[in-house]
Length: 426
Image (cartoon, rainbow, N blue to C red; front, top):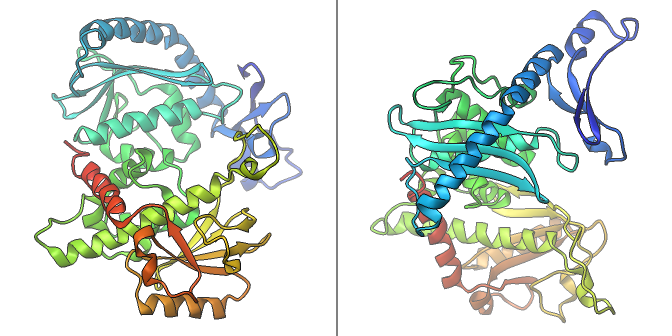
């Protein structure tokens, strides 16, 4: 079945004599996306649904309602422009709002939504998505579901999502159910007209991308009741904390619950200082990883043209919970950013790792830690990371990475993030 201009949906089939009955039952009739042209190998054969018959049923229902959904959102957009944009006013969470998601000028999702006080949850009268050649399978549903769930959390409801207008309930969108099944999540089964709060939390975790280490720590924290799934996912999806920053907080702090709820009050000075110190280290670490990922290799070249496209390369990291340090695997080669140009100890060779000790107020114990790590991992570059106005505390024999921000600026950023979490569920 053709699903866009350059890919088709295929039902997986297996010869009986190649596998036993159990394996055949597990893999047969799953639906995958097959690109007709050349694509990177990891995108060939992406799972679309776990059952061919359910996939066809979902596709039929989605196509049948697509025109009505598009027309509904377009009419709402005109009304929204007159009521709010033309007047320069901002809508309330209870006002109906149109949503349009696009990538490279191609619309991949349309929806309308509002906070419904009748059941204290999110109301979604219209919802439609499509597959496009240049995006991963089901990306429209993943992105639109993430937006809806972030809105549901931010507006302080129960995380329940109901579909259809107020006077007439509608079934959970079939394309969203198909995507959820591909992620191992069942929605629309407890209530065919809604995604229940329990289902919403499971779906939120499915649509939120997380590295393996972070996912492990996150699930452990959720299982122990340290943090709710929706708060953790919202902090990542809204950009309050990046993946490496949140991973550092979960790994090194015993005050995760307080930090993820906006931090304790200033009257509890000791706890406040402990939380802000962790936030400082996390922010500096996030800045460094982002700087290593976005390498401007053209800046030092003999050319008048600087090309930034495809200049990013995701770094991997591992955090030591006991020492509070980060081991970074990066493709960066040469002198590290934020270093002294005459310090040869901070030059990274090909396939050489980096260990960073992020400290806003470095102490003698931290300098000793750098020396110990260097002796234990002599093939890696080990350096301390500290704000620009704290470098005078670092002795000359300790390799140094200087964060471009001063302590006060980092504190302002930390307070902004904590404040966002405090008002997140207004």
